[in-house]
Length: 402
Image (cartoon, rainbow, N blue to C red):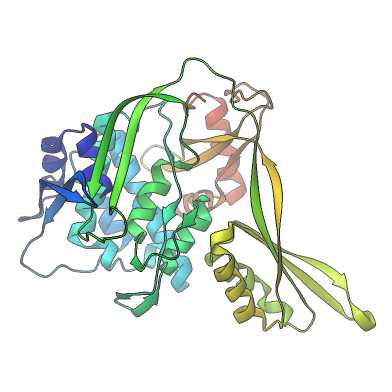
């Protein structure tokens, strides 16, 4: 649906199809057709797959196919980043290193075509170019269960929750039946966009991608809007938003279990969670577990806390917070021939201006990507983080305009 929306926006379908064909898989191709979903005209992107059975792949196999494709440098970086995010999410869910993960559904022919085709379309529209700013609205989560190689899984799928937690994506629409956001879809969005409202812009083009289903209650579409940043208007400063705080007090849990508890709560959709030591009734030591999340995922976060801690009660409240705006900038670290992509988060000043390479603002490396790069390079994570920040400060990463 995302690929179709990008093509409908104006991306070259012929180039996307040729890039998919460059993967060298006979029978793998792309065609488009017009359709209507919920009464709205849209474009559908249909992937043709070989008749022969596909095989399972590891991350290295998928990255090799991406590197051998006809994608440009930005497209290859984006596609590789998507699959790395998927590998890290699946690895966290199954307790495996990312490189050992078997790509099942997400490494199949059609998913490869989706990712590579989307990379080609984004590249063609200039959305991977330095200075481009891409934001996304909340993703529809869905509900119920979905079939997988591991049997029936709850919706949102565990990998979708892991990706959303790692990228800070907002999930909504829990009342919708069925799987509405797949791991591949979540990874595509996480790799290119930051969550946020509709930006001030002069609209240039609109694309609508349709899904296979046509439910009666709402149009099953993905929409892409492109344009130029508005020339006037107040500079965006810190933004105020509401968060849900979920807490419980625990004084009878084996301390060795807390790391797995925190991991499970984040996987359930919490943006962040932590423990605060306390002394409770009768002088018993304990921990207050606190989680921050969006209101739509509060039930899932609470359920994870109940399951993981055995607590008898969970409390929650709504709070307001003020957050500094930030942009994400990719940089490369490591020696030639083994360069690793790491994203740095660049904070904006209170006046709303993004801090440039020589500015005084906060610049930090995404820890999950730094950890993956450290494993690939054999470096300490600390050194990778310092190198990523140094690369940005040196101007090796180009920050988008606010």
